[in-house]
Length: 178
Image 1: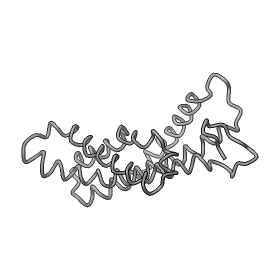
Image 2 (image 1 turned 45 degrees about the horizontal axis):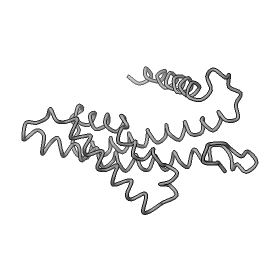
Image 3 (image 1 turned 45 degrees about the vertical axis):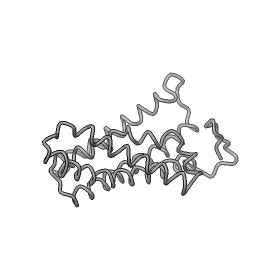
């Protein structure tokens, strides 16, 4: 159980990350839907609209437009299908539009010259990886509530420190595959 203001009732809690993970899973499905659809559609936009008319310089604007349309579509669908999830995600659902991971994935599809199917697969896999990171951080965020954290780094500070340490740990694996 968690109140709207984020204060946790420890006696009624169902365990580690229950509320945060539910929100993270809901957000993950939204990102998977938007990115899996936006990746191939941005490829189609670039291949059949921007390049033939020689307006590739509008790539960023076109990609943002495609992503924004799918975010709005996702918001409408989630609002109708799952009002509880819609309320839980609140302002975070429209913020998918400004998610740099989505726009970056669409740019990667173009830079690596993926075709339609590889673009679809790469977009889906990127969304799944993003979702995994969301769920991982949701569990860690839950632990922050029970941990003794020094006052100067509570809140955003400890989140940034943790994200940096996790990033460093993943960076250590970068040299393993050549």
